[in-house]
Image (tube, rainbow over all chains, first blue to last red; front, side, top):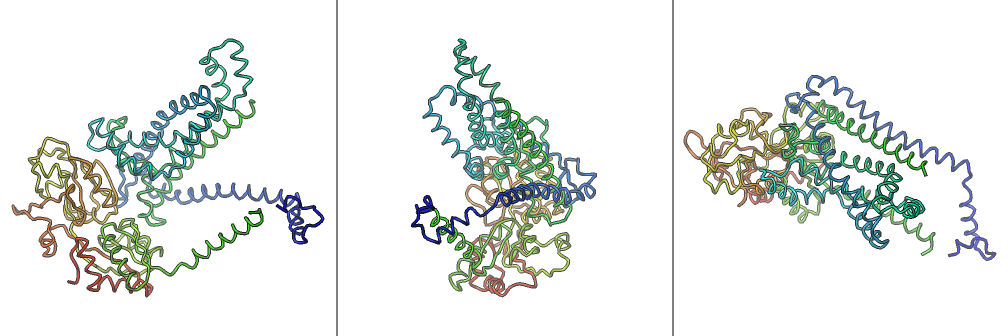
Length: 310
Length: 279
C-alpha cells in the first residue's frame, strides 16, 4: 500500500531508497537493454539456423545419392527423405483444408450472430482447448479416433494419414477460431452500421464488409495454425503409422505414412551425434524450420499490411 | 500482500526451487530397452526399499539406451540385443561391458481372432514371406480370407534385430511387407489388440489374452514359446537381456548391478516372465 504513496512525509527511509532505485535506470540504459534483448533474440534465430545448416551440410555430401530417394535404412546407408517430406506436406494440407473453412465459419457465427455472453464463453472454452498438451490429443487419437476411422472405412488399421490430419485439424481449430474471431470483432462498428443503414442483409454485410476488412488477419491466423500443424510431433507420431513410404497411389490418404516430425521424434535419440544418420535428421529439421519460418514471415507481413489499412 | 512482499516471496520460492534441483541426491539412472525395463524397474523399487538409493528408470529403446550411456547421460544402459560394431565405433575411447541379466524370446504374435481362426504356427519361411510382402492374406496359411496387418518395429529396436537376424538372416533386413512401424513393446501390444488380423514380433513377457504367441515350425516339429523351451534353448528366437555399463561406472550404479545379479534381483527377472541368468 505504501508504495502507491511514496511521497508522504512519514515515508520510511528505506522506502525512499526503494523509490530512488525505481527511478534510477536512465533512458539510455533502458534503450540499450531493449536493444540488447532484441539482438539476443535475433541472434538466437540466426544461431539455430546456422547450427542446423552447419550440421546438415555434411549430410548432403555423405548421403547425396540416396537423399532424394524413398528408401530409408541408416544401417544400409540409405537416407531417402521424400516419404517424410511428402507426409508432412499432405498431412498439413489436409488438416488446413479441414480446419480452415470450419474455423472461419464458426468464428463468423460467434462474432456476427451471437451475444457478447456466448462469445466470451465460447472463446474461453476454445482457449482452454488450445492449451491441452498434444500428447493428450495423441492418446485420444490412438484410443478412439484411429479405431473410428478404421471402422468407417473398413481399414486394417486406423493409423493413417487421414487420422493424423483429422487430429491435427481438431488441434489447430481453436487457434484458427479465436484469432479469426478477434479479426471479425475488431472490424469497427461504424462499418457495420453504415452497411446495415444502406439496407444490406446480414449475409451481404459479412461478405462485402466484414470479410474484406478482416482478410489480412484471417490469413495471418491461418499461417500461424499452419506453422503449428507442420511442427506438431507427439500426436501425429502416435497415429500416423510411422511407415517410411509414399502411399500408392500417392493420394491414398487411407494408408500409413511418416512426417518429418514423427521421424525425428522416433529416431533422434537413437542416432549418434555427428553421424550421417543424425545429420540427415538435422537436414530434415532444417527444411521444416525453413518452411515454418518463411510461413511465419509471410504471416507477419500480412498482419502488418492489415494493420496499416485501418 | 503488497507488491514488495510478492516479489520477495516469489524470489524466495524460486531460490528454493533451484536449491531442490541442485541438491537432488546422486541417484542412479538407467535407460533403454522397453523389454528390459519392467524387470529393472521392479528391481529398482525393492533396491530402494532395502538401501534407500534412488534408481530412475527410463524407456527409450535399446539404441537410445546405448547412445545415452556413451554420451554420459545415463549410468546404465538397457539393451535387448548386442551392441553393433557401428555403435561401438561411435565411442572409440570408451570401454563398455555387457552384463546379461536374463534371457527372453522374441515370439511372432497374432491378434486373438487370428489365433482363434486356427493359425497356431508359422515357419521361418512363412514369416519371411509375410515380412517381405510376398504373402498378404491369412488364407495362405489356412486362416480366414483376411489381409494381414504386418507390424514392424523401429530399426534400432532390439526385438527387431533379434527377430530379423534369426528369421530373415540379416538384422537390418528391410520389411517391404510392413503396414505399420511401431516403437515400444506396449505400443505394439496395443496395435495388435486393436486389430483382428495383425501379426507382430513381441517379447515373450508381453503376450496376453489379446496378443497370442505362435509356435515355430522347424523340420516338422512345433516348438511352443514356453518358458521351459526358452530356458532349454529349444525355442529358436532367443536373446539375452543386457545391462550395459562403462568402465568408469560410479560405485552407486555398480551396487545396483550387483543387486540385479544377486538371487534377490534375479527373482524380478523371473517374475517379469523372463528366464533368470543365475538360478
